[in-house]
Length: 190
View 1 (cartoon, rainbow, N blue to C red):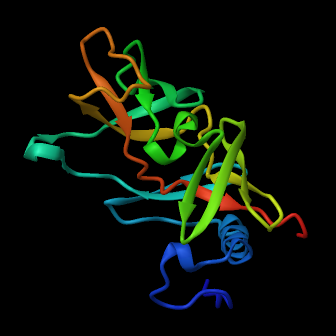
View 2 (view 1 turned 90 degrees about the vertical axis):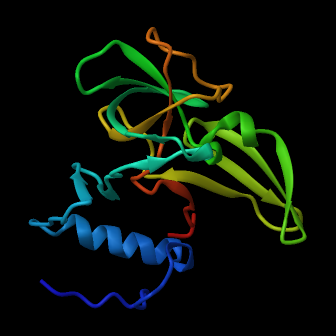
């Protein structure tokens, strides 16, 4: 099946696509019965969403030390970290969320971006209000939010994140965000 999506041009970057355009694409993708990906890409289908991501082969850490990413399954979503289990059935581990998704980074903070002051206030683990002086507030959501049962690629790390604890074997982890999660605005007019 071939489709022409009006809101998309070849070579567009993900951040150049409007929320309405992305919704059009996701809605169309949900209707496709047979969707596949060639490694290192993967497709994860759920009743209400499709995630297309990339399996990392080998990750280079700061300082040049390499490490293998490992799959983990989300069991609980917290403000700054996730509780997960490794596929081999180990005990629960804490996985630091990427910096952009940590509540402690953004909640009740004001940042200057492009000459404008932007303030953030969290409503839940995956939604927040963004306020720019002189404009209406925007409610932002993590698209695709972390859900129980999601498979992540996590990286054992050797430095403290300040948001996740060391496991029983002395390891710390961080989510690599290979699913491409990002903050998105949902237009209340639609």
